[in-house]
Image (cartoon, rainbow, N blue to C red; front, side):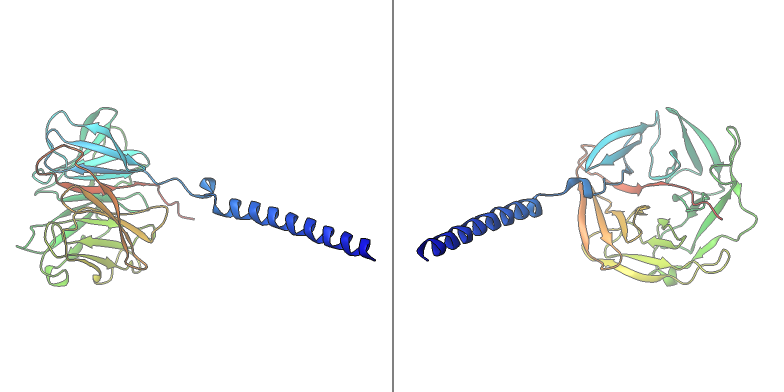
Length: 284
């Protein structure tokens, strides 16, 4: 009888040890970060408005590196689509395209161009705005960026009227900054003023958009260039007109610091735009 009790106690001890070892292994696996399950950060591009000559920087995992530099002139706004870079300067009436390490003019307007962006269908757009002096407009260009020939220039689309941005609907100020999400909804930001706002315009039927709806307010700084993450439309990135890029969760309106560095080593840095490489959405 004593021997049986001894054996039972031994078995219980062995079982307890095995359970402890298993629990320890499971806890170590649970606490170990699963790097493979975390998607890599989407690369994006930024530009500093006052850098001369202008340089476009590519940022991956918060590490910037020069992507393209002009021989002369500034760059204030950028747009990417299928690996192609388009850019403009605030005090210029032209839109340029990067061709290898050179540039070519692809469009010229009658007045100053403020911002450029590409929608998910591959259409290049640009804005004209006068800040606090008058309403702004966003124009659609044709053909699509994947259909333009090597020496061809863009022209303003005759199929659609420009999108009107009335100052009365955006707190009386708009510097021309805009972007699109993967569903073709339009976003506007005020520009270089504080407090600053982001507005959302729902895509309606055809080429129509709804009225601007204020979705976010920054009381501490400006909201200049904006770009929606193409891999997750819940997130929008924006430049603060200094040296910082913020990442905003559009669903919960929580903001995180995505990047903060004086990449141009200037006493007065002005990151003016941020852009992702847009992949054209193919229509069925």
